Amino acid sequence: MILPKHEIIARGLIRDFLGGVQFQPCGVDLTLQKIFRFSSPGKIDFDNSQRVLSDCEELKFDANEEAFLPKGAYKVVYNEVVKIPLDCAALAFPRSSLLRCGVDVHCAVWDPGYEGRSESLLIVENEKGITLKKNARIIQLVFFSLREEAKHAYEGKFKGENL
Image 1: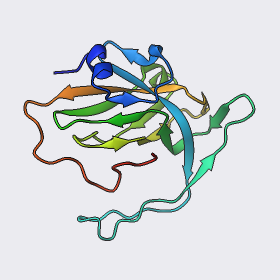
Image 2: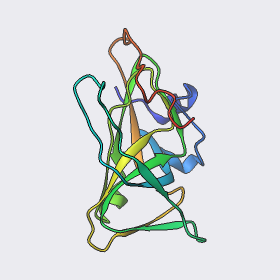
Image 3: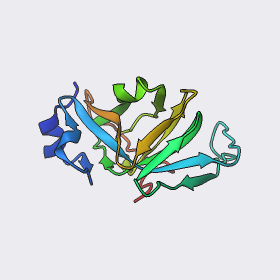
């Protein structure tokens, strides 16, 4: 079952949100805090023993709190802190306005037990690029109720990220 707005708020699944306009009937919009450009290759293996995350360089917003992004791949960090209880999980979808500008956001699953200020991959496919304002709403996070509580909470490297 998808959790409605009132349950997301009542259960404290999201904090540090910027305003009520972020809450949708079936989720909450997450907003853009930071943008990074990838500056090195990464390495992914089976058990993470050799994992190397790509280095990134933060891009600065201009005096109008805007950043122009040419076609390419970027890492974004959200303003909001998400806290997923053991009886929930969450998935994110790009806002339709973003898609209509030729830009997509790719996200992993928000597992039960995850807490943090999440990061995602933003892909600019539009040959002309896009300008993003600081605090722009870029994804909608949808919370799902699990049939039963998870037996184990997420305890991976990214728990507590960007807090």
